[in-house]
Image 1 (cartoon, rainbow, N blue to C red):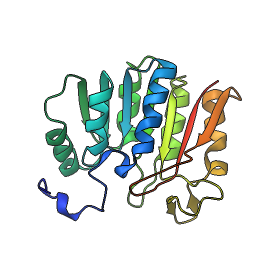
Image 2: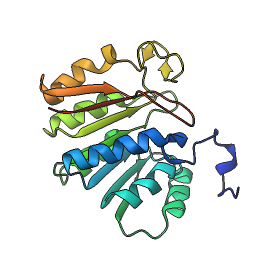
Image 3: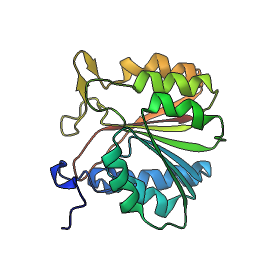
Image 4: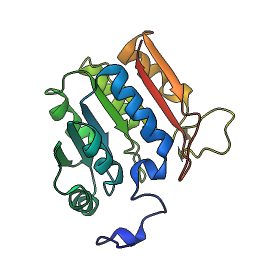
Length: 198
């Protein structure tokens, strides 16, 4: 395998779409068809493995990444694309308010921006609610109940689980939403939660 600059220090599967999860790819295509989605926002592009897949399967892709080195790798990986791909450098909580004002539904938001000490997820969901959007949301690295085989993230006292985000989700959708977990996973085998309007 050929590594791009700085890439050899990444974890296994990190350069592949959805960390090597082909079932996630199938789910995203299903949601694309169900809601007629052409635009995807990726919060936390890392080195662009998933971004490249999005660019091959959706018309418009917006990627936000706080680490400049990773953003350069992602841009090189995506290369030429028939899709409209735009990258933004910076924290999602700073970039989102500027980008969301020009977003129209339906839009799919893949949230994978948690990294390091600061965890922006609740603020990201708050920003979505402030813009009165009801997107299709997928949060990566999420705890799936009774599935010890699927990995999830913790940050100190924060556990990526439903009880932690439920109040924020209700600010976006009220009670008019569907929530479901991934049932199958491959590659790095990470848990995911999908939330979308009824």
